[in-house]
Length: 161
Image 1 (cartoon, rainbow, N blue to C red):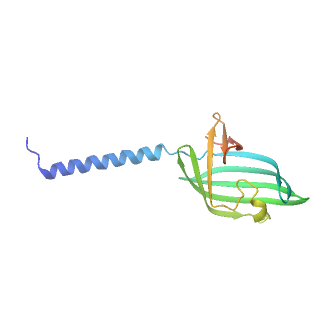
Image 2 (cartoon, rainbow, N blue to C red; image 1 turned 90 degrees about the vertical axis):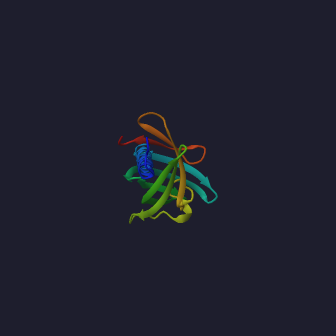
């Protein structure tokens, strides 16, 4: 049986296109979504400038493909001075080998936010950074633990599955 080179070329091209489509479908369906969850965090930290006590509420929702919106609301007290944390972080992320790499695209400070740069350096998600590495481990169907380094930082409860 004689097969023309043109027909063989089109068959190979069709097979390559089909393979690319299958790979793209796999990547889109197997992508890891950031878990939509909320958490509250109460900490007391000793800093060189004094003791900082804070209560922080964190809410994470997906806002598009490979995008998440993180809302931070809370209070921080240092040396009797109260500061309000009220900000929204619009982020993009990717998942690689068990880690979520989160990049802040836009930070929106609410009108009542008076949290300063020096105070922000003592907190997890309020830090003045543009890139974070978060490891999220699933405890069960309704809870996740977020690690920022070696120790757990947040226990996040799922809001929507």
